[in-house]
Length: 180
Image (cartoon, rainbow, N blue to C red; front, side, top):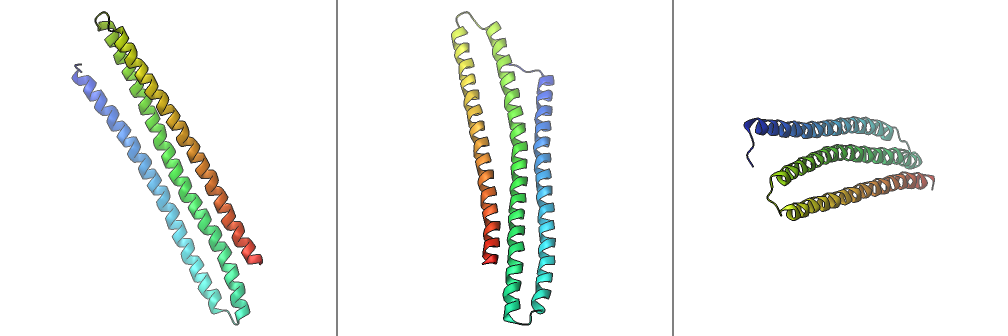
């Protein structure tokens, strides 16, 4: 099928816009992750300095044991919060990529159906069965993609809930250990 130069220019422009969207999302995700890492590094540095000062002020073993317990729990909570934040950034970025991919698939399907409709109008008599088969195959592929997309979303939700449960257990386990 012949495409006019204007159609090719429009197609290239559309592909460039999609590539720019992907790059923008990737950069935003990287920026959020970098900010998160910078905050974590600053907090770790501050905690290390405070911990060293507290350690230097210890006068006996009882104070050392109490200090160990007082330093361990906040560290566990901060590590868990950091891991949760990294996961949130990754999940958000993945969701944004998924949204663009879904938009592109929908647009591709729309264009494919339009091209098939054009073919039907100019197709020789008797080719309706072949075109109907092709449309049926496209519908089956779309249905498969929709099912796969739903499963991926469910897996993501299960992973999120499992991550939250593990994080909560880690924090609560640290608190219980401190009390014992």
